[in-house]
Amino acid sequence: VIIMSDHGMEEASCDRATFVTNYQQHTSDFIIIQGPAARIRPKRLPDDYFSFDYEGLVKNLSCRTPEQPMRPYLKENLPKRMHFA
Image (cartoon, rainbow, N blue to C red; front, side, top):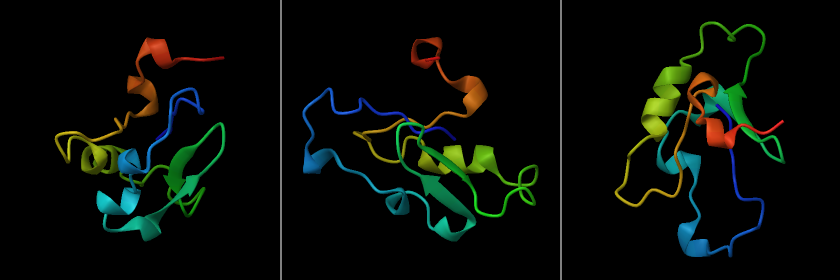
């Protein structure tokens, strides 16, 4: 799971802040890597690389509230407009 943001190009607001723990109860199975290439990955790599439930994680982070300030994507489903190289 890749995390994307506007990198400060838009005005920030604490009202729009969100926390993964608001959407996912079992956060001990993965870690969130912060920075310009932020992402969520299994905590136990390489052991859990193929057995980790990536789709389940995205499903739990999707459409949970009417005005959710984020949209999760699996790498292969990331819209073309968000591809940067």
